[in-house]
Image (cartoon, rainbow, N blue to C red; front, side, top):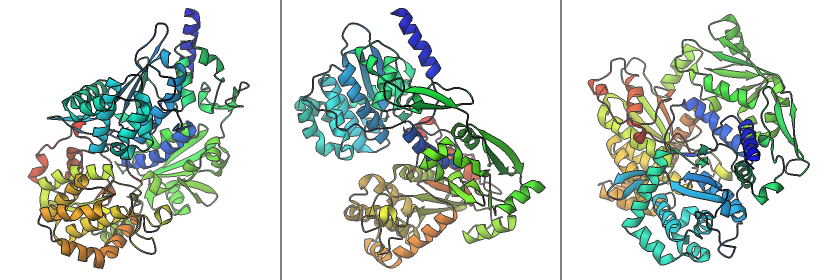
Amino acid sequence: MKEKKEEKKEVKKECASKKRKNGKCEALAEKVSNKFWIFLGLIIVLALIAFGVKYYYSVDGGDSDSIKYNNMTEGESVSIEFYVMSQCPYGTQVEDSIAPVLKLMGNSINLSIDYIASELGDGNFRSLHGQPEVDENIRQLCAIKYNPDEYMDFIICQNKDIRNADKTFEDCADSAGLDIESVKACAEGEEGAVLLSESSKRAQEREARGSPTIYINGEQYDGRRDTESFQSAICMEIDHPACSEMPPCSSDMDCPPKEGKIAKCMDAGTPEAKCSYVDPVKVYMVVLNDKECAACDTTRIIDITKQLFPGIVIEGIDISTEAGREVAEMYELTYVPAYIFTSDIEDTNTWQTNLQVRGAFEKVGENYKLMDAATGATHFIDKEAEAKFMQSIGITPGDNKPQVDFFIMSYCPYGNQAEELIEPVYDLLGDSAEFIPHYVIYSNYQGGGEDYCIDSESRYCSMHGVQEMRQGIREACVYKHIGTDKFFEFAIAMNTACSAGNADTCWKPVAEGMGIDTDMIEQCVDEEGEIIAEADLQLGNTLSVTGSPAVFIDGQRFNGERSEEGYKQALCAAFDNAPDECSEQLKGTAEATAPSGSCG
């Protein structure tokens, strides 16, 4: 037995693939360029598909055999730790995926679930998806404490409609066989807050910054998150009858990596499955850059490209050289960095199997180029073109008054947090800089129509619905007719007072409580709404805005840390002569740093 277990450990070590970032609801930002995150967003989608993400909402409820999820029997066991946010779709996904394994192997699995949140004191907490997520975190912790045999059935039931968890609570608790009164008393009393405080501290001790963060037997797990992959990882740790029925590989990712080779799982998921290896397709890439551009870092995109296309051969060219100017002219480039790929990319495994990655490219002649919207490139090749562009968006070089254009969606949590972090910078610097809010607008979103768009032609639409679109216009009207002070006050209040589902009926009391003339706002929405929307749509297209938040300082995309101090430092660097206020330190600790994700 000991020898067999050691052999499994060696296989596990051999099979450990390079760490990749799966989808996560990030609780803390990494100091990564926004240029890279736009491209990485596409890669995350790729990773989810490549990793075979599956949702298992058909797991039996309380009628199935009871499993003691946390109380172990004697013998071999494996410890699994989940650190999640209860309303994060990536967190609910791993819970749904592990549930069938618990049904099959539960007496050999010691599962613990903790929740990522920030404790504010006095029994209050902050979580990425708002107070409803805090409340559900507490309900689930109370269910775990008082119903250790049934809580997972309750969580799986809640996950089916997690955005309405407060409404489905009693039905799900009843179907899972929970002691409802004990759970309610816990969740509504001080005990629930204590449980969340203890749970969030455990998450912090594990440095769990994104949902989900997973540990198996004390080692962080970065593999695929479907049921088969969890079972396979568990079978690397223990002997169990269910492990004998596992196929050798279920996808390419199950095959141990070999340097310079592409792993393929043949007859995936069957007893005849086996791993085979082929040489990668050789692809040539030219990276055109400007050595004078301090913000034009290509490292991370190149690293990701090497992972996606292992046969890549890269040549770097500077725009100051004759060869660089020829490349810029040949492909009619406006910005650098620019990434040009030969047509051999069409023959690669990644290109042929992942439409999401292909969507990041545009055809240029016979070759392909990563789109500027995907890379976030904004450094102009032609200085005259740059001057015209700056003038077109209202920037006057040399006026010592930097302009901050920040694009948000009124009910994107990442955009809301950007507003709340930029507002203290505005309070500090005031009229020394120009702070201009804009809204991310899509044409024909989800096919258009009245559910998303304010106009009959579906030109002005918002991701979270038409009420979000109208609320964005209302906030823009406050900015236009009352000013920046009142804009921040109104927008930030609306972030928590109302939602994308009730903003149309909820906004008036909020505005009236601030002394805002609601008749004026309604008139502005009716008479100027589409004009405001068109201006934001046009500017967003010019700046290649694809999601919320997107922040630009004097026309350059903000690449720094999403914190009060991060935004302040970037803005202060744009002054010709910075005001004295720039020497004042604002918040910039890890706790004050906003998530690195976006809506879009």
